Image (cartoon, rainbow, N blue to C red):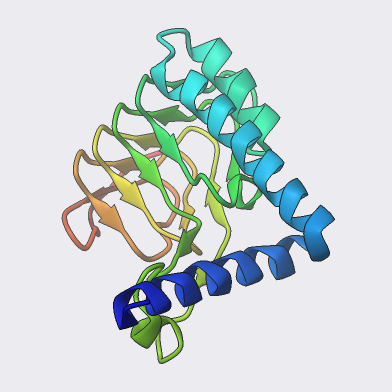
Length: 181
């Protein structure tokens, strides 16, 4: 076995161990539960991701564990974290644009050097408050809260909390305007 293959197997085992610990699973039964849960989550996400019916997409995301309020609109191709959907909360009247992405974790999955060094897997809740609009292509990262009635402009990368009633743009996202209310 080459050194490359050995490192690849180690990272797979480490990733699996991290997920087993996170979900409180162990042994062969735990590994089976983990795989079944991931397949179920992936199937529901895939159905939601490709759906042109927002209500159906919301139902599929709720089945995955995403907490979604009333009257939300999920456009086709909105991506919500595949591994940790339960860490995402979306309040009422929120819009997610096409190709918006919500990542509740980061993980240098295949890089053992980084993973075991200063860059281990991290998780964090994402909270999108009522009335927020996440425009197409925006990225929301772990640990971020988007304020009530705030607008995240297309292509913005949000790495810090956004206050209520704000318009943000850019990478990294920055507030450019307060919305009168």
